Length: 203
Length: 309
Ligand code: SF4
Image (cartoon, rainbow over all chains, first blue to last red; front, side, top):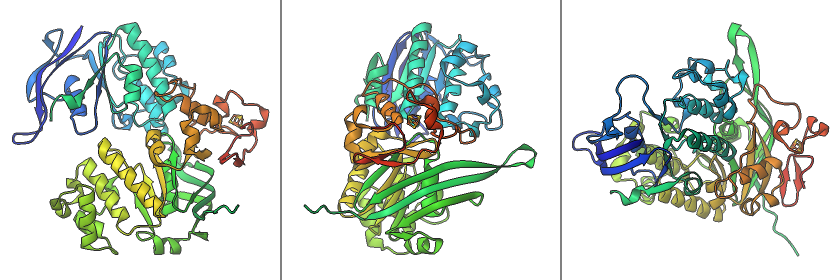
């Protein structure tokens, strides 16, 4: 499959500066494309557009030539930098985990999600533990592309290495396509199959 | 040969901080988040405390600055220039000799224009303008309110506000997120310059790469305590020069090194093991590790492990 940005431009409002201008690129299944560059170049905005959270001001995002589905489960899923902001603080972890699909035992095991974390509230887990939930819950068999926006930037390096190890295994096994947004060059070199330097694009 | 012994500007001894929490059914529960933590920062030195976010590192900064919430209790002691930092002393020094760079703009007064806040009680308009220029803040920013600031701008304001008075001690809690790489590096260089002129800096960060750039010593924070403090050079040399098994694992897990993770997770504050907090994940753990493990001197650093060499 192919996830593609076609002539994508973005601005927050008329007369506002262009955050992205005429971006064209594609991610194939099985590829892990790194988007590298300092903050201020619209990396996060691009992630949200690719995942369908934002509509581009002009241009479009396509999945094998079709636009992203508006209803039902979206095969393009996104993981964020701050897991604590992407879970419902009033839900216990069990409910949060199974929000999109019934996460299987293998996935739970692979991410080291422990049984007694299930009964806890989000604020009783560390950032690294929460992020494991946030990743596991989007790895449904229907997910084909993963957009990862600085997903381990706020975690300690051991947790970072743990999470990526599992993600790499899963992406190889399920032939996922991934967009990996990071400012960490060393990390990109270890996890990506190809890299794009966003500073070469515009501005 | 006489060696110059540097004075401790900040000294933290056996600091224990607990929070009283209400559980379901109104039962009170005490949650200990910092466990006999000891640390010192010498004159003109940058010490980075490195650990994952959400692991309680900020509590350390808040304890030093007297910003702990009402439900917190604290034992142990904190000394500034050799004297106990009591609430009265703190009041005398905060904002002048001791400056704080907080994690978020929530610490700014939402109803006061930021230019005025940077001038603060003790500084001048001139000094503020000088700092704004240094941190690439346009003049218009002076008249903005905190809610109008972008993340990067806010960060630069917080840094300017902290350095107006050329403080003796700076406590910086995650000083660089939101800044672009050049500005982050610039900030660090500024820190270095301040330190070279005698300011002591305690920098709390989750970003070990930052610590590598400027710190003289790095303190490794794990599960609410510091397990090792060593010269930065020992960290740059890879795991072999380090003392604690966690620090070694930490360095090995870096993507620029082996990127090899250690199994397991940091224990939750409400569910800590007895004795060494790292024991459930430690390849060298043995019965003796279940006892109280004190911090001890080892080579040029300090470690909290009975087996470290
Ligand atoms: S005290 Fe024991 S368990 Fe703790 S780090 Fe040292 S060897 Fe490992």
